[in-house]
Image (cartoon, rainbow, N blue to C red; front, side):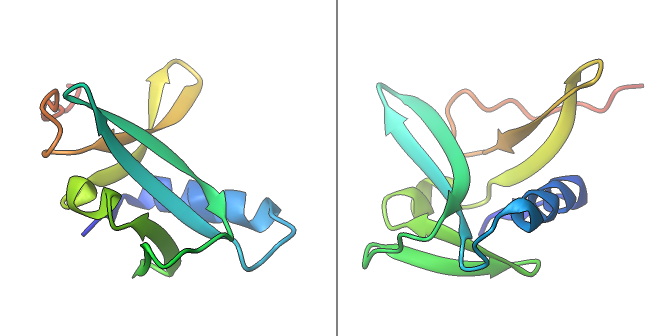
Amino acid sequence: MIKITDKALSKIIEQKKLMKNDSMKLRVAVMRKDDKYHYAMGFDDNITQEDEIVPIDGIDIIVSSVSKPLASGMTIDYVEIEKDNFNFIFLNPNDPSYVEPKEKK
């Protein structure tokens, strides 16, 4: 299952409110290419038979059958990368390059 931190959830909800189409769901994709994981996320209303809709914290997440095992146990967070520069990050223990983050002191 994918987890979403409170900060990420708040930003996702904020972005969803800006959409003019309420039927849009959040698609989360994880792809493996050349032993590297690649991540994508965005709102989508094109749902195929290969997709599964997973409700997480009140948000419907679309995950393809290819992405699902790669995303299992992943956490989506929204953090300050540099001063005043915030972005979504994907913390995925399945990713060979994953390093558990350490808290700043």
